[in-house]
Amino acid sequence: MKLVVVGAGGVGGYFGGKLQRRGTAVTFVARGAHLEALRRRGLTIRSANEGEWSVPVTAVEHLEGRPTADVVLLCVKSFDTEQAVEAIRPVVGLDTAVVSLQNGVDNEEKIDAALGAGRAVGGVAYVFATIEGPGVIAHTQGGRIVLGELDGQTRPRTERLRDAFTAAGVPTELSPDIRRALWDKYLAITAQAGMTALTRKPTGVLRAIPECWTMWRLLLEELAAIAAAEKVSLAADIVERILTGVAGLKPDTTSSMYHDLTHGKRLELEALQGHALRLAERHGLPAPTLFAVYAALKPHAGPA
Image (cartoon, rainbow, N blue to C red; front, side):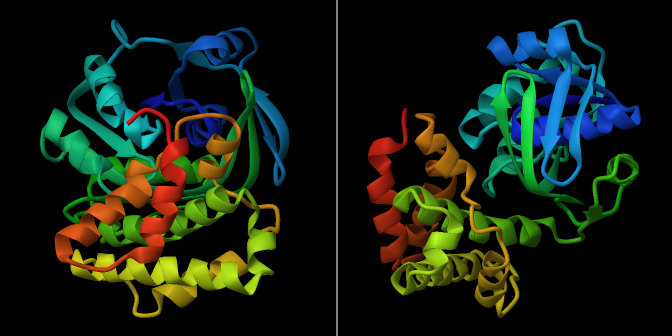
């Protein structure tokens, strides 16, 4: 299998590195100091669960002249989806699967709109990992993937990718309803990202403050109502399930939005809270807590 990872940050670096170490031919697309470090020293993963390990990798800035890929893992921030899709055109063939492992619930639509219907495969990555420094990924927890065809069918391309991930030590399952899986995570990360970024505090602190925990619940309830209006078949107790999951997270857990905010980077505000608010408006649903989070973070979001 020939695989391309676009966005060699926490998610792409961690999962791509696991595949490369197991023997999959992976090409990483990166830039700047990170690209140079990958070329010189390879990729290093510093994992709280697995220890530290390194693997030599193929890293490029552009894909012109590269062979056609069997699979492209799109791991860029959601605001870069359209640009990344254009960048992968040189390696997209008739049978190439483009798997989004991104935050948000509309990336697959953007992929298919640009490359043709049926190209996108939905993906949900449950992992906490960031770039610690050039060529180095810090993995703190998680590491599971859910994959699924958008039409609910099972196809050899997703079965092969599942098998490759599984062989690389990544627990991976195929979902017959990937839209539901995407929305499950969307609710969880939109609330968690909003709360940790807004307060600049980790999960353990927020769980201990009743008002913050109530606000977390209100966000999830508003998001669940939006999902229902979108006819997404989430579990009836989805809010309680997510809160139970949050209660089990390490106290120092934050979010990628918290990390981006505290490091002066652009936020995925429009893909998360912004997208949900636009859906709420479309359906005539009140979402005051979501709006408050969105409005308070908007000055920090970066370019529109």
